[in-house]
Image 1 (cartoon, helix red, strand yellow):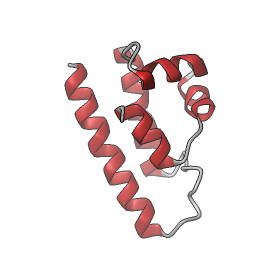
Image 2 (cartoon, helix red, strand yellow; image 1 turned 180 degrees about the vertical axis):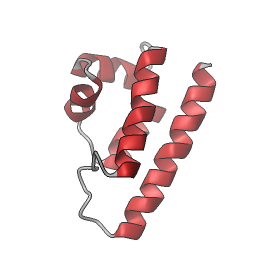
Image 3 (cartoon, helix red, strand yellow; image 1 turned 90 degrees about the horizontal axis):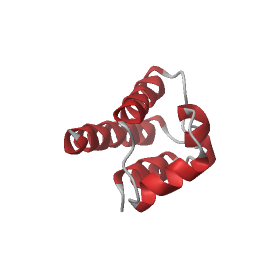
Image 4 (tube, rainbow, N blue to C red; image 1 turned 60 degrees about the horizontal axis):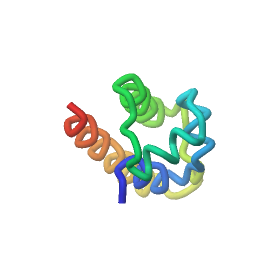
Length: 90
């Protein structure tokens, strides 16, 4: 599974939610997840900012009503996956 797809689905976000947050089209998200194209460095930075916003509580995952421990583990996994995704895109 593609890293962006896995991150998005683990957070319970629809493609359109991620697209709206990043200011890109839903089609761009679709193409990134399929591996047709890679996100630009700017988009990857925006995804990292999204992760920071989630951790700080500015943006909540769709399923934020789940137990606090579950949310922390998902956020930790999100951070790890973003780190590896950014390193691969170099």
